[in-house]
Image 1: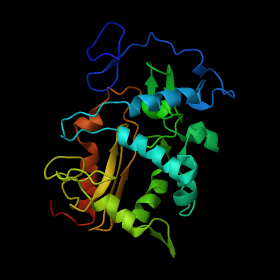
Image 2 (image 1 turned 135 degrees about the horizontal axis):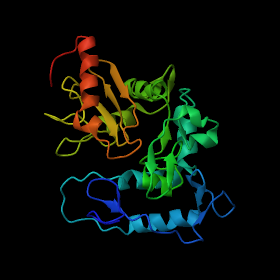
Image 3 (image 1 turned 90 degrees about the horizontal axis):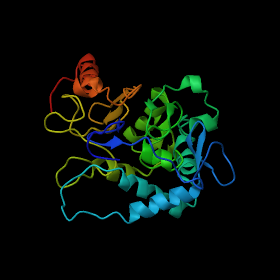
Length: 283
């Protein structure tokens, strides 16, 4: 990866350009699943768990800047996954299915093609001409999550809006579902209300800004949620008992399609929902 354009380079994100003329070491990759290559990387590419091990070693050895200013990163949630798996003794996908998705009957999956979901039900993410050389459909778009086999703390979850809405409703109800407390209410408060000194983000979710930012202008300051890179978002607003979900694949066929971001379409659609229910007091 280089940080300026070059002949034959593939534009990635921001100023990053990838060189597609590379190859994996043979010990790390196979064109089919084997006993040594178990991590799904693409429709016809599987990685060895040793690749994941090397990747985690690199993450753990990454130097932390002495500059204490805020910087968005996926590394914290990738590492949080390792904590969850060490403490629970379960892979992340099995842990969340057992303790969250199954109790609320939410059909959300990592690696959905391995869970019986048909490819025709899944929107294509992008035409990846850099790492995997294929149209990604049912395989996670995010490269880091893909290198971890599609199960990662930062990306990789597939599902329809109505299924994601169940998780949002669970959070809105402080972790309760019917008569069962699925998530401790104290944990929900901790991850949705605790903010950094700057107040930009909660521990687990993004928050509105005083101006601009990821939400519409009517979302209350209590709102929490997330905008996804591929063109998705969900927002939970406890003040108005309101959930807003928008799922798209703006990265297909290319990540250079930034109309959704440039025109702030998600924020404008969210404003329309608030206007429809008469909640039109700007923050």
